[in-house]
Amino acid sequence: MPLRAVFFDVGDTLVQHWKPQLEIRALTVDALRREFGERDWYGKFVDAEIAPDHRHESEEALRQETNRWYADWFRNSQIGIDDIEIDHFRVATTLPLDLVGALVPGTPEALRWCKDHGLIVGLITNTLSRGDDEVRIDWERFGLADTVDHVVSSHSAGWQKPHEAIFRRALELAGVPASEAVMVGDRMVQDVWGAKRLGMRAIWRRPLAGAPQEPVDVEPDAAIDDLTELPAVLERWM
Image: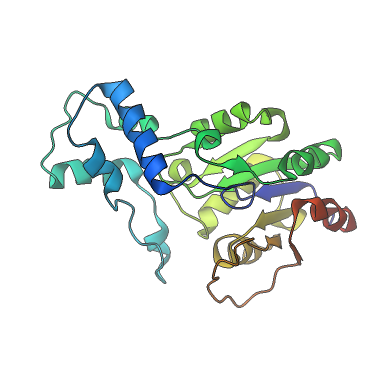
């Protein structure tokens, strides 16, 4: 089948070179302070392990409910936030990606090549606080909003990759069947296995740091080390 849509993972596929955790922590606390004034629990919140461990066999373990997780944390910590709406708080914790990371070399060129060749471009990204609206703002700040047609974040979808619901949402927005779409990402489970079990093609962008990968029972349709290699792969399917 001809290729009509390309979906990209974001973290470590299109954006990398993350700032140190201590610097990200300080930026997050500063952002909360600007939004809500001085509170003595900001550091405790930022240091907390709030998201559940999704490395489980069950599909239900991939469900995402960030606002409920945050509300549970405040209740369990016995911290009252009656004057703060929880979704407002979620957005305030979302640091723009250009403040904490940098575009992978070749990202603008790869996205623009896809658009120039008539492909629908979507982002499918696992996030904690970052919803679809915040992801769109990230790409506006990068100056690449015109290269992205659709955004599907796990926060807004309510499911983490590799759950099929997040991929089906992207296919629905693009208006294409799985056989006419390809996923590009650096994670063998979340990106490659998650896409291929729905009938999509998958391109594995090998992690630069050689990050360990969980074993899967599928192979990517192609593998690249650099985004400059992407057009040659896509051309074969167009």
